[in-house]
Image (cartoon, rainbow, N blue to C red; front, side, top):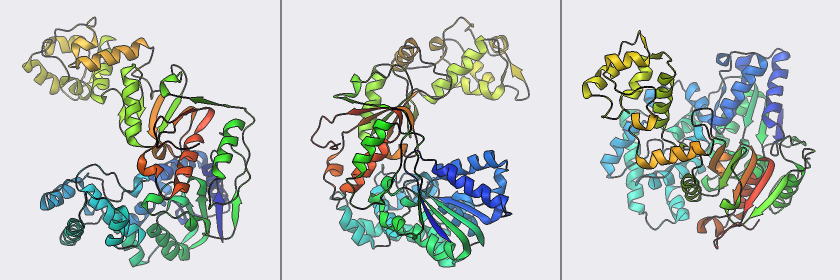
Amino acid sequence: METTIFGPPGTGKTTRLIEIVQQELDSGTRPESIAFVSFSRKAAEEARERAASKLNMDVDQMIWFRTLHSFAFQVLGLQVKQVLSGKDYSKIGKLLGLEFTSNSSATMAEGILFRPGKSGDAYLSIIQMARVRGVSIEQQFNEVADRRLHYQQLKLVDEVFRDYKKETGKVDFVDMIENFIEQGECPLLDVLIVDEAQDLVPLQWRMVHEVMKPNAKRIYYAGDDDQCIYSWMGVNVRDFLGACDNKIVLDKSYRLPISIHKEADNLVKRLQTRQEKTWSSTKETGSIVWHRDIMDVDITTGEWLILARTNYIANRIASDLKEQGFLYWREGSGWSISPNVLTGIEVWLKLCKDQELSAQELKKLSTLLTPTIITKAGKKVLANLDPEQTYRLTDIQSQCSLSATKETPWYEVLRVSETERIYITSVRRMGESILTGTPRIKISTIHKAKGGEADNVALLLDSSRACAESLDQDSEVRTFYVGLTRARKSLHIIESQSHYGFPL
């Protein structure tokens, strides 16, 4: 039995899939015969955690709640040391005279394949893309058409990587899938759930259809073709649409209010290839507001998700918000304040409140203190405190010759740049807490925000020349559809000020 479940934004797809798991368990199906696999680690972990909570199960019982490459990793009996690491990429880079990002191989765990950044990443990206698509590196090279790259260099990178893996016996993430298919073995399953199936690349579909499907009694493909936004890495929405004939559409959104649902529905109708769906909004009206500039949006209160088409645009917005003293979380980078500084402030404030702290906590502080309040000898003592003991501020003052008191402000205690100090001061003046929870403002690319939501969403229509001139405009429609469907209450659309804006 095969079923495709279409889950439009906010319709409770994951909830429905967990209900299927619960029904299976209630009917006597063993947990170890249920597989819940996904394109991304985020989706797999969410499903595992929600299932464990709802079904009162131990996470260890859910042995097949995994990403596809993790499933292959487990079946193949691999160990972590057999997978290419950052050190391996460094060694290969030295052989080639190139640099590689340590996770620049096909990291399907994160929901994306490649993270270009260093000199060799573009070459490796072409090689891995060709493999997951099932085409030659020459064809992929010609399709990418990057004039900065050279085909002979590409062939050399491919050769060196192959030789290195052969010599060391190590594998990358694409190898895991390829080896799984070649081995052709899969545990017998009563239920196979493939989540985020619209994002599977051809190689992953082979893994599912050729090896997993023959060993499963009941199969569910779950996703939303309208949110298929990875065509650039070889994903073909038709693979998901044609997975099977039995189709179910979840028809009630618990996220989108009436106004945003209407806008989303109008946008998605531009698509040439899609499954027709009838689904409804919440009973709330919601709101859509247009702005000429992101700075015209009042983000001083409430929960906000600011979405950009590219990292370049997202970084520009982050820089502007920082200048204004806003605290934010940048997806992929974290807090707008240095983590070390945050740790130092937190530890110092605890000491000022006369709390007892462990030696491990105080060791973090030792590298951040200014030379004016502690000597080198005192720093050394602070870094080597007895791990079995706890300490108060008075202990540190006496044992480590710390001259600061609980009245000494953190910016005099910690080595913080003037720019960082001014920024943190501005943040606190705006009434933002820098030590509790996650910032109420998040900045992200649309791709990284997929699956997320917020009360208020600001969506920038700015794009890039490459995106605007892409032959695959359906993909651009789907991308901005994902962006505007993240909003629970209000959607703020920021008009493009360039020639390459998306025509919403």
